[in-house]
Image (cartoon, rainbow, N blue to C red; front, top):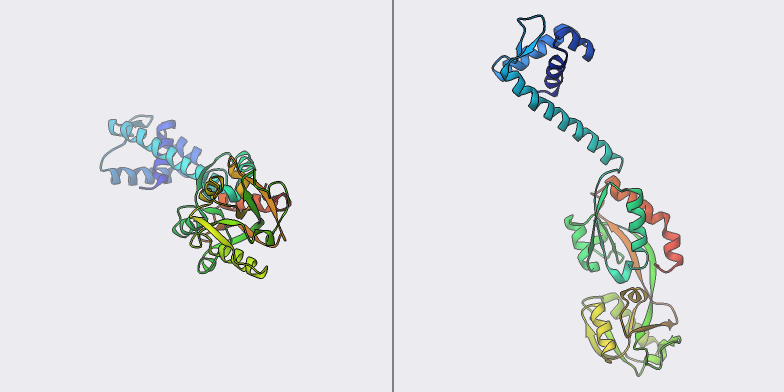
Length: 302
């Protein structure tokens, strides 16, 4: 059954005349008559009583009219929603993030996106960088604020660098290094707390290499599988740590941060997405990040 049958039928019901319906629909009366005949043949019974001066609905016609109008309203709504989706006015967008990487600029970006796209339903999911990459591959999130892509994911996903997060020294406020710049060589005799190598191979190996270049091997007192775990060990007095500056957004009690000299080591923060998802909602979110990239970079992610 075609929507055209329903439109013609409801017009006849509204105007009580084939000719008036034809005029309203801007078609010939014979076309309306043919459509009604086809409709009744498909239904298997009469929907219209043509015996009087005005066309009347049969009992079955009244039943059909109510459902026909529901169907037409649903079709019109489907068209309207699709048009709104095409223009980015409605839809959904799932965003993965990790707090200590995107904690500075993320709330402001989300507020701005909600303001400009109020019809988009956002799903904000906190997850580690490695979890975001898997979620992008599997389609569980649309976009992620994560670390730069590594092989083999850089071949299937797309990514753009937003800013680089410098590595700083985290310690208890009563540590002698608190409140001043910390030269890397001064860490030679310090117990270090590190995120374990399986969690962040690049940073672990980079710290070891940097220390070796300064002529010493780091004294690794303890490790943790997550950054919050590293901060907990620092607060417990296990040592100090080299961490991304974005960790300050965790607002850990009993922890202070100092610059590391030289400022040569950093971790990138990127926006990554699956190219199979090219919806307007994603496109507009990426555009918003690009518009704010200089501000994000100049403020160090804040």
